[in-house]
Each structure stands twice: as C-alpha cells, then as structure tokens.
Length: 374
Image (cartoon, rainbow, N blue to C red; front, side, top):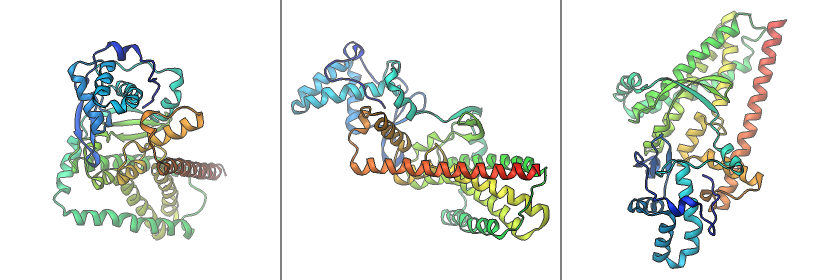
C-alpha cells in the first residue's frame, strides 16, 4: 500500500474524523498462522499484532491525531517514529477499505503503486457457488488415504514429463498439419481448461475453504480463460494445502500432456500428428501458467511454499518504485538487503521466462501458419 503522508502535515481527515474498523471487517488466523484482515469486499491483508492493537484502539472513538498523541504519551521515546509511521499506516488501512471512511482518491503521483497492483485478468463470474459441484468430488477423495493421493499426484509429472520430452525429440508425428487440426486442438484445450479449473475447486473443497465463484475471464484483457476464484485459500493455514490448491490444475494439464505424448509415441499417421501439435499447445500453456510474474498457478504455489503473502505485488511495487525513483511505501521500508535482492532476482527471472515463452509461442504460431498455407 502506498505511503504519502508527512509527519509534519496531516491530512484533514486524520485530524477531524473519528476512526474505527469498518463494519463487516473480519479478523482471522489465516495462511501460515498469520493474523489477517478480510475487508467486506473480500480482500485479505496481513496485519501485525501492533497494527491490530492500533486498529482496535480506534474503536474508542479517536481521531488519527488523538491516537498519535495517546501513543506518544505511552511511548515518549518513540514519538518521532509514531508521528511518521501512524499517518501512513492509517492511510494504508483506509485505502484497503478497512476503516469506516471511503478510500481516498488516488493522486497522480500514485501511478507507480497502481501499476504494481494492476489486475491482469478481467473476470466475468458465471457460477456463484462452484463448491456445490466440487464438494461431492472432494468428499469422495477424502476417503482415499492422504499418502496414496499424494503419491498419485506426484506420479503424474514423474511419468508425463519424460514422455513429453521423448515424444517431442523422437520426430514421431512431425510434418505439415492438416487443416482440421488447429480447430480441434483449440477445442481440446478449452475442455482441458475447464477440467483444470474444476481441479482447483475440488482441491479447495478438499481443504475446507470454499471457492468464491467461477466463470470466464480475459488474461491481459485479451486472451480468453476460465477461472475459479481461489482467494479464500488464504483462510487455510497449512502451506501444503495451499500448494496443493495451486498445483492440481497444472498436474491435470501434465496428465493430458502425458496422454498426448503416449499417442504420439504409440500411434502413427494423423492421430500422432494431431497429438504432437496438441502436446506443443499443452506444454506452452503449462509453462505460461507457471510463470510467477503473473497471477498464475506457479506464482500462487511459490507464494504458498515460501509462506509469503502478496509476494508478487510487493516485488513489483519495490522494483517499480526504485525504477521511478519514488519513496517506498511504508510496508516496504524495512526490507532487508536479502529481501530486496530476492525481489530483484524474482522479477528478472520471471521476465526472462516470459520473454522466452512468448518467443516460443510466436515461433510455433509461425510454423502452424506456414504449414497450413503450404
């Protein structure tokens, strides 16, 4: 969240408005045992014990200025820090729709922060409670021993990846595509996407956190996708469960890639040729979906595995503020050198992976167009 307040000059609302927690804000113990706030709009935010204590103190009907005076009287040695940090903290809470005031209008100088928080997917909800459909499947899976279920999930990439590599390097099914193949391959990919998202919904129900909704969306406001809203996975405290929720979709994709590779290696003629094309589509889609720069399954799995919250947004905010030479937001000011270096590496590697994947997609599209035209 951005930071623009000054210790010397307070915004008028901090001096005049009685502040309190907005009605409907929920305090939970969420991912990794963290204390989190859930806004009425369903946004999850980390909050420290001291931050939560400040927020609850506002319930006594204080203004921001009165709160700072009270804290300064209790901790006189930290008065300068209190008068510098608390205005930023309260402004951040207001922008996150946690306080009883409407969020302030964004200033033009806040464009860097807005860019770091840009949602790359335009969503169109179609199903309000996907858990109703996914729940019965999750209950059946709950009857399977956990170790057996994990072994089956791990077996999919262990078998499918070598098969895919072997199929693509063997030369089987190579050749000019038939005119009907691209359209059928696109249809098959759409079915696979629906199964992919259904797996996410089942995994959420299996871990007893309800998916919010499901529907279709436009990635980068251009590419059509299906989605299941998994924001409520932050309610699940265990890392493994959140990793599972993120990775069951890609595991589903690998399963079908393994099926395509098997057809390429065991059949000849048009079936092998078609499945080779489909396999390329499947692998490019999988790699794109694992890029941690975007709000993809790969990003959410890494975030869950390392126990981070909003890692992508924080890294983007840090890098963009540094590039724009603007002051860091309050929540990024205390980053260690190791964390700063980690954010730089994370963004750099993600960009390189995105560029490589984009080039591979363009090369394969060119091959497909040339093959169909010749």
